[in-house]
Length: 373
Ligand SMILES: Nc1ncnc2c1ncn2[C@@H]1O[C@H](COP(=O)(O)OP(=O)(O)O)[C@@H](O)[C@H]1O
Ligand SMILES: [Mg+2]
Image 1 (cartoon, rainbow, N blue to C red):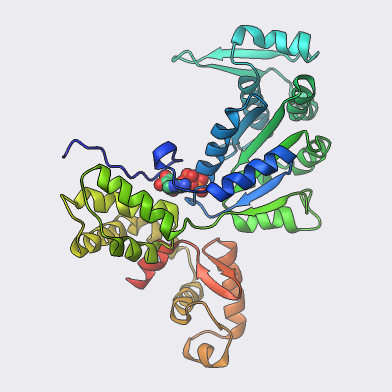
Image 2 (cartoon, rainbow, N blue to C red; image 1 turned 45 degrees about the vertical axis):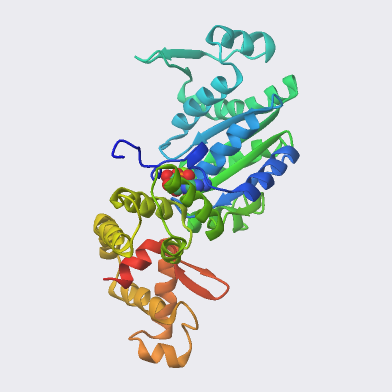
């Protein structure tokens, strides 16, 4: 039994058997890609955005009609880097045979960029452009237009996924990007995804910003209990272990179906279980994860002001409801004015959010950690 690999995984994106549900979301995304509807997919970190987008990419690539470019902007910190990385991804998406790349540009697309090719130690080729600082703006525009040229020439549907899109803010190229891709109309579908709600809301909802009202807003929710039940029970059964529904429900009540934590907790429970999951194992596992995540949460905690800390505790006490009611606020040591400003700060820091007048802590395990502090 010991040599069976743990069937639960948490960390980076998940594929195949590790991917649970998201059927409805995938269908909707596919329809939007077919119609060329640009959209913004927002959800907190570790919520399954990248997994969903990569699954969409995999599914769409089964059809010859589509070409998909997936670009993670997380580590991009300059426009130069954006140009080089985007260009490399575009070339690789359009032509897998390196001997045909020059041909594609010169004879077919009728452009002659100064392409550089470098080969890494594992024979992986990456493409770049040799451009001067002066040529940067023009090159950026040219690169942004490449997918459009290709789509028209080959009559393909192209989907460009910009993951961690909030990073674009610091590159100061929002206006350029928006003005170029606007001309691509429905030929290219742009999917923007990100986890920093405060930045993204500003980018897409502020009248003075380039992307104001430019996209459809697409929300993904937690994965439902019934889907987790099947997913988890199958994984336990296949590895000759037993878990009762009630334990899954208990964990779900803590994680609210938040994908990363469902997998993380189940992974620990699975490890600790020889045959049948017991309440003691569940409790031990939760304790272990609280210990493991202690550093992360206490680091966040120490960046908060005393009022912000009080506000978080207050949210927990009131279950996020009626925070401004006289009865409630009297029992806290906050005034309505401080409460207002601390709530704004906590929302800006992406620690809290508000849904239908209810405030809540975005990270369900941070909430659990706080409750057990
Ligand atoms: N559809 C899913 N089914 C099962 N687990 C998932 C799913 N989506 C995400 N997860 C879990 O969440 C973790 C983080 O997923 P990821 O796609 O990287 O999130 P994000 O891009 O939102 O930060 C994964 O390692 C996995 O444990
Ligand atoms: Mg991601």
